[in-house]
Image: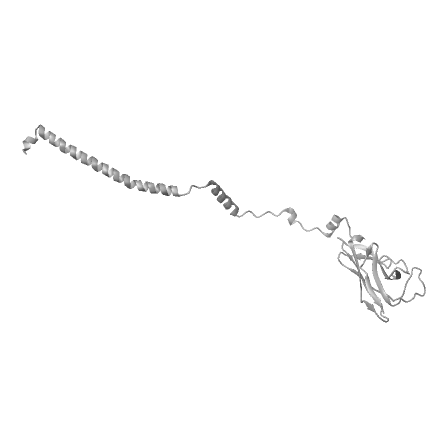
Length: 232
């Protein structure tokens, strides 16, 4: 084609058509590029959305429980000792005051324990029965008690027969006051000469016959267990 011919009106039309085709190609390329970029970004967004949706939403209840557990796991401050815990134990005088008792006062019967034990069960020939009498103060403080033969009596019987008693024929006042410390036993050893006794103090008491006898210690309303023994 003649180049001059392209310079006329027909040439202008030709170049316009060439430019329109070029613009259309550029638009198509831009659209394709935009579509490719959209597809590439689409899966990333979807995967991000899926990962975001896969992660569980924090539960406020669980969060509160975790906070509570962390709070209880933290070390608590050591308790301050109370004045009563650090106070010294009460003295004997304080304990006595609490019980309304003072040292040296007469013993209360409910604080005394009276017991008696025989040396053996059978006494043959000239063997004399022997007994151990024990008195223990269980009160809060030391107290005093009369342990004389009348106040703390040992009596021997055989059935309904009153055979012998330490309260019979006592010379003098027959009073013996002892200081009884708490928990410290007072012990008296006593022998019986196998003779009967009586309140009228006969000059020639008769001998006890062979047989079974019972010995008991008495002190006011207190009474020991019975000790059974035999004379041969």
